[in-house]
Length: 606
Ligand code: AGP
Image (cartoon, rainbow, N blue to C red; front, side):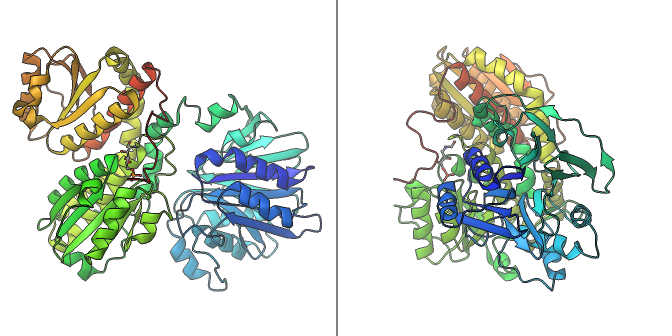
C-alpha cells in the first residue's frame, strides 16, 4: 500500500520526510519521492524508482532546504513503475501525493484540455483538477474541497502550493491520514509509525474530511467547508506494533483488511444496477471475447486454488466455455496442446513465480493470448502477459497468501462475468453474481469480526493434532485444498485437502484419533451429499469441524455457521474462517507466523 508523509515547521523538511518514508517501507512500494517548498517559495521535486536509498542518493546531489514538504512511497496501481509515475505529482501551482484509486480519472482527464500529462497516473489528473479550480482568489483549501467533490473512488492526499507557503492541505476518503501535532510543527502520515518520535498527539482524519495544516497546528473541515472540532488522540503502541496496524502479525492484518482491499479490486469493475461486470485490463475486443471457448488457468499453490474455484464459476457463467486449471510446475514440462480459441489466465500474487513465468512463456510460444491476474504491478509476469488485470490487494507481506486469494478469485470471476455476455450467458445469473460481489466486502468484514474469537478458541482446541483432512464438494472443494494449504504452511500440521466425495476411495482409511477433519458444507443442492461424507467420518470416530452457511441440524464436534445473504460466493466467506483458524493454530503452536520455516513469499527459483 502507498505511504504518505508531510511536514511543516521549523526543521528541514527533507530529513523528516525521508525518515518518515523509511518507517513506511515495510508496507511495500516500488518508487518514492519528496517535494518541498524552499524559503524563496520555489518548489523542488525529487523522485526515484526502487528503494528509499535511491531517493536519498538522488537528494545528495540536489538537497532540498525547505521547511515544508510532502513525501510518498508508491505501490503502483495506475501506470507502471517509472520515475514519471512516482509521486509527488505537479500541475500548475499544485504539488501533491495521493493514496487510493480515482475511478473517474479518465473522464476528468478528458475535461482538463489545457493540461499536458507527463504520467499515466490518476493522481496527476487530480493535481490538474485542483489547479484548474485554484484561481480567482479562492484558497487552496477551497480548491481542494471543490475538486474532491468530483472524485469517485478513494483518496488520501497531501497538497501544497507556492501561492500559499506554510500551508499543507490534506484530505481522506477510504485511505487513512493522520495529522501529528508537534511543538511549532505539524506532520502528516498515512500510518502512525511515521509520526513516532516526533509526537504522540494526533488527529485521525475521518472519511470526507479535509484539514489545513500549518506550523501552528491543524483545522479540520468537511468537504462543504464546515469547521469541525476534531479532538486530538494519543498514538499508542511501539513502531513494530503500529506497522502491523495494531495486529500481532502481518498475516492477521492481511486477513482482517480483505474487505478494504477488496473494494480496490472491485473498484470501477462492477455495475450492480446494470447487473454487469467489466475488466478494462485484458483490453479484449468484443470479437476476441466472443471467440474465447477455452480458458486454461495457470498458477502455483494458493494461486492455483484460486483458479480452481474460479473455474467452477466460469463454467456456471459462460455456457459454451471449457476450462482447465493446471499446476504450473507440471504444465511447463508437459507436451500440452491448446485449441486456438484459448486464452490463458496466468495467476500470481508476486508476479515472479518461476514455474508460472515459465508456463507463461511456453503458452506464448504456442501463440495463445495470455492474461495476467497479478497483484504486484510491474512484476515480470505482469510485464510479459499480453494483457491482464491487477487485483489491487495491496502488498501482501506475510508468506501465507490470504487477501490475494480472495482478490484473485474475484478478478477471475469478473473476467468470466464480462465474457459471459458475449456467449449467451444468463443475464440473471450475471446480475446475481454482480450483486453478491457488491456486498462481498461488507460480508467478509462481518464474517471476520463475528467469528474471530470463535476461530481462536477452536484453534486452541485442535492445535495439538498432527494430522488434518479438509473436505469439500463442488465450489467447496477448492476451498478445502486452500484451507489445508494455509494450515500446513504456517502450523506445520500435516493437512490434506480432498473432494469429500473421494473419501470412500481411500482417505477414509486414515480416520483415527491422530486426525481431525474440517468439512466445508454449503447450503446448496449438494448439502445432503456433503453431509454424507461427514457421517462416514463420524461413524469412524473422526473429530469433525463443520464450516457452513446452512441452518440445518448437523452432527459434528464443532460447527461454525455463517448467516449471510451471500450464496454463490459463500466458499469465499467460509475460506476466511479457515484463514483465521490456520493463523490461530500457528500462533498457539508458537510458530513464526509471517515467515514460516523453509518458505519464501515469492518462489523465484524452480
Ligand atoms: C500460499 O499461501 C503460498 N505462499 C504459496 O503457495 C503461493 O501461493 C505460491 O508460491 C504462488 O505464489 P504467487 O501467487 O506469488 O505466484
